[in-house]
Image (spheres, rainbow over the protein chains, first blue to last red):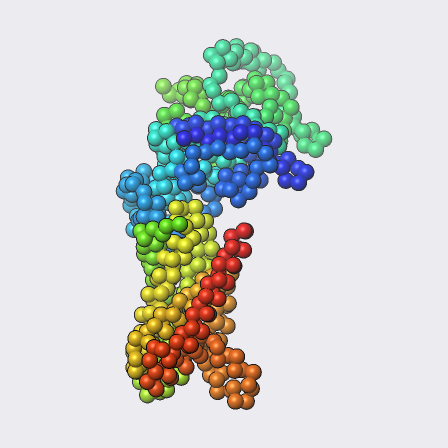
Length: 338
Length: 235
């Protein structure tokens, strides 16, 4: 039922792709591995058996019980959705009901359309239906929600919940922390330094308390007549100063904070807590353990499920930032909604 | 390894739907039939022309269609999905070959019928045609494994169509260039020789050498296909 990496490590010639790590993915759990594209592709090749680990091993129940959701998957474009699913249904001699799966991915109104006439997101949903038909034990998903429209993202999250209920093992391979935070229960980051677990648990109540204390302090500070409020960042030995309203959002990865401004990111020397304190008066909001967002730039709040939310910003990239459950309550409070 | 008929059938059905909607490739099967009908109406009923038509049907349907079916799976990146499924390579190729086989037999039948070809001994000619179909499908599979896209397969199938359709006329040149006698061992020319012998009243036993040579071609092309398959599967 589970997928296990035991002291798995990969080297190509002299360079380390990823050092030895242990990871167990249990049934009924969605785990995300955040990594760069190279590691992601290597991992998939290794699980497919086309490439080998330098050391260690990967254990899974049965090769036939693995289902892959590739980022670049070809579908039989001249078949209709119904025919396509029926074909794989026969091929896998699956006992799943095609109607149920089509409904789950919400393609029932399009089932007599040829696949080549579907939009990109609908094709991805057809692909999702195709891996559900396989009724596998373990699902390996490569960048499941990349470039999807909002409706399809919601469907994907619903499918993930369904898979959790059925006690399936799901491994999501992605390079976007935002994707990982939205879909997965357990998030790890894998790079050439090794494996780190990304904390996603909600913060402790005391910390929340601290924030409140800081709030009152900053309110006092704001009264001071002259105050320097630029945020310094470092770009190639240069120090660049940004006005707080320019900043779209701030992300923290591996202890390093990055300011995101007009689609570019700049490393900043302050910690997220310090920045939160400094930026609170400018309408910044700590929406997640590793994110601070400029509330002025938030356009939409998307509710994926009752417990998972995202903020969509009004910048050129329409970037989205995860919003954690407890913070949702705070945000509602700030907006005056109850 | 057991072959599941259900899976072969699923692939056959899928390929049939896919093929019938792919007009760029499916239109080709009408070409030999139309040509045969024209020749038939014009009253050209020499065995050479009738068999040029039948050989064209073999090359265009048996080889070209089979080649396209395989190459398209590669081009559209759908082969990976099929390979990861419980269907084995043998079942995938089997389903495709079955479709090509049926199509070839139908096209050859209509080509022969419309060009007014009425063999003296239907059974012997039918066996020869079945064997030839196997050879051309083997050829198509081989080219399909080599070609990376439908575009490429239409190019590499051209020499095959040339040799096996027009190649039959080489026999007229053997008087002048004795070296071309080698060409008489080609399966298409063997088929014509066999048909001529049948017209002169030959039975199954008399044409056995011709069938044997076609058989050797089948074995050779399938062996080559297996070798190429093993090599290609490494990458």
